[in-house]
Image (spheres, rainbow, N blue to C red):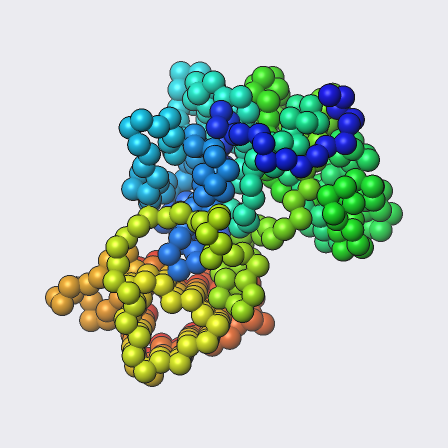
Length: 434
């Protein structure tokens, strides 16, 4: 079919022969201190999951069973989580494998960018003889059936398909924006355009947007989501130039000039959770009355490690607009607009408001090394905070609202975007006020 023929939606295209490559990111500085001792994809979220569970679950729900995760920083906990969680039958070709940066006789460098990470891992990816290669980001929250994107890719005759989020012009300056024609073929790419005139030139044709049921001033611009579907031979050829180290900055703009590159509009919830503020808000949104990311849709489940924990024990508490994960022991507590993670222990008289409590990796035995147990003590007041795993907060600890504060590094806490973050394994003495 001609590349300029309008594309259609279909679910009749299997992705069984595709390979997914999930980019684990670099040092994760925007998510520090949550990435102090772990890689970005391994950061806990939603009470019981890890960030990496979202793209992997999207793949499994889309019948993609061969998945590589590329990472190079603090990957021990990520390796452990993936090894324990995603185990396939001996009679299946499925796998989820970590590909960490490695020095070879041909290359002694670490990953220099997203495209360079794929370049250095290409021999492992190509060994699977994939029909298509799907490149994904490891720090986004969304639910997508990649089979629909795959159908558009095949029908349009594309060499590359780029997933795109319809956004209002007012948000365009925060994204890489795609310029498309009436059939969705990408004609240009502009990184963070500014000014009405420049942004106006990047608006998408109404006929193309209406083809997908998209209309209105709030959805005139297509922002790249950092999700790419490649024909393998095309990807191999594009990666030959070692000067091109990033997909968004180098590979895609270069490909647009000489290849058939099409956009696939995704008009649903999508959030980049690569910053503390975005990560915090996305987690609290899960506990709202109408969460935009649906954890309760059995058609598209989010998979994670089965832990076989007991149901939570809640005694004399007031809980509103919150998520309480399994294995918790909570007594005499007021919890509002918060997410309480697995194995959390919270003492009498404590108040949690707009708090992400990540929980614990284990239960403590009666004899413990610390005077302060894992969890939150009695009569604490915690507001607008992230409490990382295995943190120990003594009695009468107060964390107040710092929404007007600048970023700050304390002795055993950090403030990022007005949110107080207590790092993993930190001990906060009784009576501390932050």
